Length: 568
Image 1 (spheres, rainbow, N blue to C red):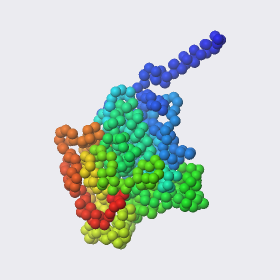
Image 2: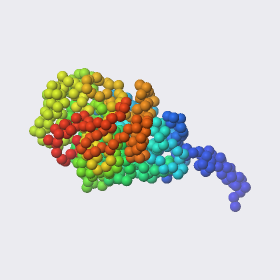
Image 3: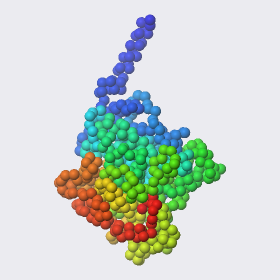
Image 4: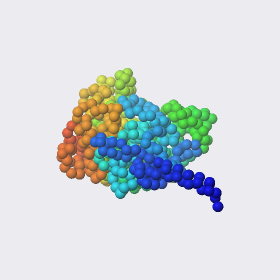
């Protein structure tokens, strides 16, 4: 029998526990920003949408165990969970950032988050009170950054415009550069870890999004640039099948710069920068060296690894990007040549919205005249360099195709005399050609809505006959970049129209399901195979065909480039 003093202390402990704010909120349901997840409780906060409506924001939710220590260079694992209530009101960590190897004429919003290996977090934004019976459509967005930089933080992907359209929004971080895409190719250091992080997050969404008012059967997966390319890769991967019901691809699909053909060479080159005793044979020794090195040293070494696959033109490729994995290995994500798989219909056939901006290359175009002239002379002097090294053709055909491309783009003058033609070629080579090809070949198998964004953009360069909307210029239209205010009165009109088109597709798998005065009562038809009809988004809407002289360009490539093809 406990003493009376012991009983008094016991009751004091019970009283103190019951008076704790988090305990009362959890028991009584007083705090509607608390959500109980299988791994633990989180507390978010309430913010305001563009139109002043309240929405619930939950940031830095762990979706996988920290990939640190022995988990570095390993596939993502389940998080062990946490005690108490996790603060989910801010983005504090992002994945380690690499450096894009070329010029980028766009400034991303600043973030106060710290670079860390412990970075596998996602953010959920919902316009409805969590815990109800809502079943809203969900938009999972993968960030841009060439697989080497970027993050899913609120500062970059603020959802206040989207929240007025009654959908749930999810953004995320995933491992980047060497920490996310270095691989030995033999399974010792698995390939495509960054993509496997994304897949793990998609599985988290499938299991948990109902708690935030989202319907796991109504998930649209989308992204911009590298995030858009990643979306294409999820369409190909059997691991992601069933985790989303439609897709949005903005300026990225099966682009050549999103694929490394010699990953083992790159992995050992980096390893030997850290420890030149490794050699080029023992994958286990390489892994040991990499797990002992600091993340900062690994990221610094990755900048010293030369890209042997990239053409030395206006835009350089990142080194550590996705690979085609050996199908005999365990836990693979991507095992088929991307282009050929889409061409043959071997992908998850869901409704798709896909498109490009009217002059993608502006974002990467060197503003330094000397650099531009050097590239122009290089192509003029060696036309075979116009043909991407990752295409399947011999040196003779490479030279023949390069010569025809040079004549087509320059008008049989030269790049040095016609610098605008170099920009036009660069736009097609790095982004547009592969997107148009993707839309053309996938439209045979699934409803595909194809667009070109022609509105906006303050041109960094001015050449006759070229567009003004560069790569990623659509991101500030859809997302909240408060540091970058609208420059023109019509900007917000375009924003409202694009938001309606995008969220219509997310909800109904059709961007114009009904006649709508906001959308000028326009009808956006699905792409007809072989017709290349696209929806041109400008001050007004129109339907165009044969974007960027694709039929003529395709005819040139198809004379010389043959399967197997990973990119186009």
